[in-house]
Image 1 (tube, rainbow, N blue to C red):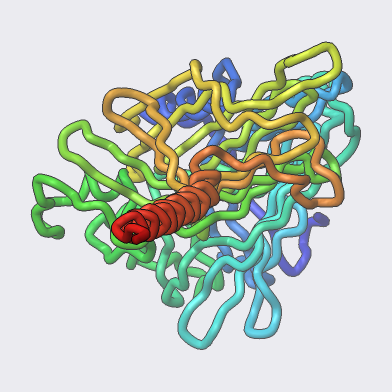
Image 2 (cartoon, one colour):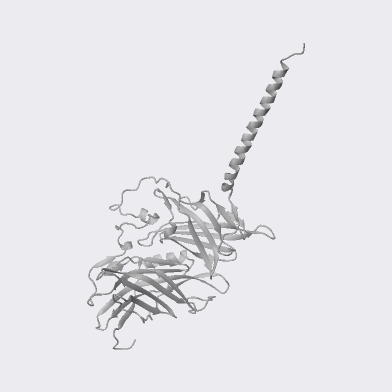
Length: 441
């Protein structure tokens, strides 16, 4: 931007010690099958208006976890961090009729921006746009798709009073298909008045655990609730009357759907105390990878419950193949600091099998034993991890539990038929005996 313009931008980047967040980042990398740790930088942006007064200020840290396809049609996980060579072209102060825009560019063709809108009393983030460039071979080695890829997601920032500073030290996550955006140590104020950063802070929900929850409680916020703000939990938790809501999840390979799953999920955790929790599909995002012989479905419920299902293909004859569920892992995280509450894995399953090219269905409740302390209950299951055509399930192979529904009327009918036969036979025998009582004179 030319000097002497109606506004100028001042940006400085510095290395920030990761401290305890480094362990959290490493945990996330392990969950997404990545390895290694890369340095991340904090970015400070001070946008000035024509009078050289601050109109938009932000200081934050962020990291991106990305799944991409390689030339061998496999899927690989990578981590993209802010580098030291950050630029800031395109940031805009904003006014009553124009949105404010905070934009940064970094690395080999990567960029990130968020726009802010205002009312008479508040401002808030609107949309976040993230573009990563797979031509960056350092971050995306052997990428099949070359060039920039753009992800747009609605910001989850709540409305903030004008002249207040929005602050969020704890990690926040945004999930969109194959990209997870992670933010922490965030300080931002849009539409700064009179060039002076506000003195009053508006803290995010993660920084204020005493605020009322806006979603049904998860494992994390139930087990970590402050005793001063929540009633004591009972020693035993009864099973919810309602079954969990059925979620509809899918994965794509390019523009084609490669995995379909409809299922209601319920966690049964019995470490310190028994606890049953329904997974809310409205707050759960799906990620994973599709392959020719292996498919992985990862479900993330507000980044406090991570569930992974691994499906594989096996040969049952020289001409036929089946898929089945081989492995399930569950990780329970504390949303406030990212620490692990519990982690369990079972890689010895042989369930949900059906011929390749078909789907598997089981409407009845099933139980998956993950460990001694963690179980998963499934309801209304319909899964097809391979060979999905036209975004629709193929013919379903039903489980034996559902077959029982058909057997019951058959058994009842057979029993009634047998009872009728016995009555008829008894009647005939009775008639014969009555005739045998008369003698011919």
